Image 1 (cartoon, helix red, strand yellow):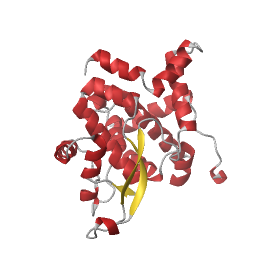
Image 2: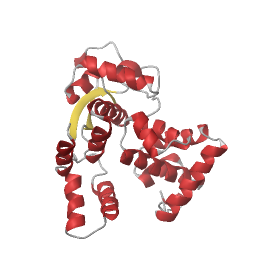
Image 3: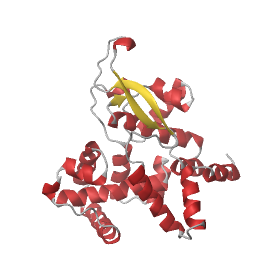
Image 4: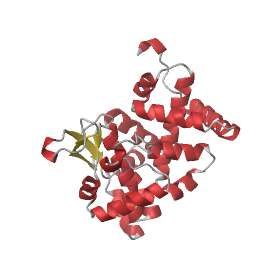
Length: 267
């Protein structure tokens, strides 16, 4: 896609409209406007009851549903899928192209399904992404070769939850890769990588303060499984270099944006 076409798509998103209003009408600096956007999204759109632009409701097989039954007899559940993540997807498209964008969406969708108690099939992914099942199979094979777990219904049975793309990316960051290097290797946007790291660091800090997993999840507005994953990544990457990188980021984050100050018995 041509650069001008990508820029036109970016300007049509709800996020860009909000940023433009802050910058042009309220005269906020771009970095301040971006921070306000992220805070507004967390406060106003953090629940699954409301669909954000780019999201859709789909019916998928429940994760705990066994195999061997007809589809009519298989338990189903409704989940919300973020098919288009707005500016983050535009960034992936601009930096890496259409194939990388589709693969990033596959990773996002399968783990969104898992977080909501469902298991997506390759057919489900093909339908919402408007491609063939053969294309999805090829993308999943490529992602698996890069070290990503792709927990579709076909391969979820017996392998457990697997490592999400968020934990995979945080692990690469802990081991010394820069945001640009991670973005190039994983075909993710810089903003999403930064968000994963900025969520991971407070998880570690709150754990050190004695908060349990569910309390950390509640304070940070994330799922308990992700808290467990992030803490496991921290334990696995315990070399002096990894820990030094973590301590520097902890100091930076806690100085610029303190994590919630809540007593442990208050939750």
